[in-house]
Length: 197
Image 1 (tube, rainbow, N blue to C red):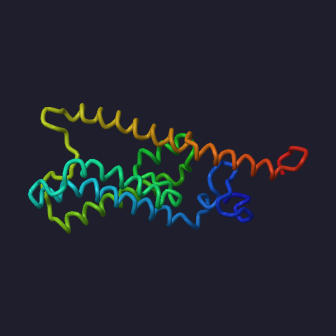
Image 2: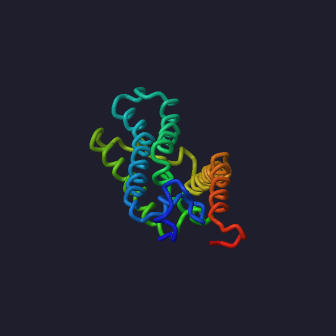
């Protein structure tokens, strides 16, 4: 438990830079539920488009909607639950944050479990609604593409995704404003002689 956790108001930052309520263990179930629900919505939208088209004749959802919907869903998830869990939605993002010491390692297994649970539940829900639709909704290598080539593409795209997230979240204007706020708060908390209190 953070030493100042009981004395600081929500929204203040701990000495590690995280909001104090984000460090409070009593809210861990909320964070895990938010990760599970967010991943459920993302997989439901990303996989659902292909499955709906396979079930109802192939042209019900246009390709532009199928490729735009997951991005719009991620944006929506970040807006409505990003402050609860960070909206990682992907084990690679959770691990990347932990590697940079921007996320506690002790939370990584729970986050990954919640993300996997959300993905599985979304898939089961789609199958219950639409039935099995063959390979519809699956991300499979295209004709003539080897598994090794597909894996290389996935690695490159995942690095790009994680770099974009880390660059924006940790280097964007909101983070810089939060960092300035945190430094002002820590500066005010120090005694006049500059020693830590």
